[in-house]
Length: 136
View (cartoon, rainbow, N blue to C red):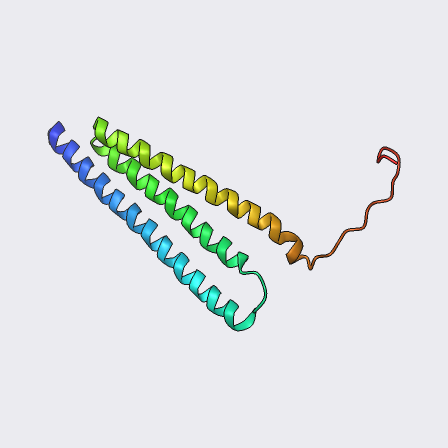
């Protein structure tokens, strides 16, 4: 085998891997949709009047993972035959997907923080008695 044959074999293998990773990303989104739909149906039947934020958070986790898989597929695609055009497209896609992932993760964190008091039954913790070093 010469260098050209090895390079072509590696390129084909990476393209197959890219296709697999893209497919996994799509499957993760599909699984997230199924989980969200079942959660919404269960919520509509059993939990009227309560927040459906946990369903949104679960779906957001699937989307976050899928975005990371899709970005990995784009990186694989560019690693096989890097041209300046492909590198530019990868940079644009990476920036967009990273921004989406960042804001989605931030929203998930904010939603979880907002849901924690509700999950505890709106229990309030009494103020600790003022003692030394606690300010009077």
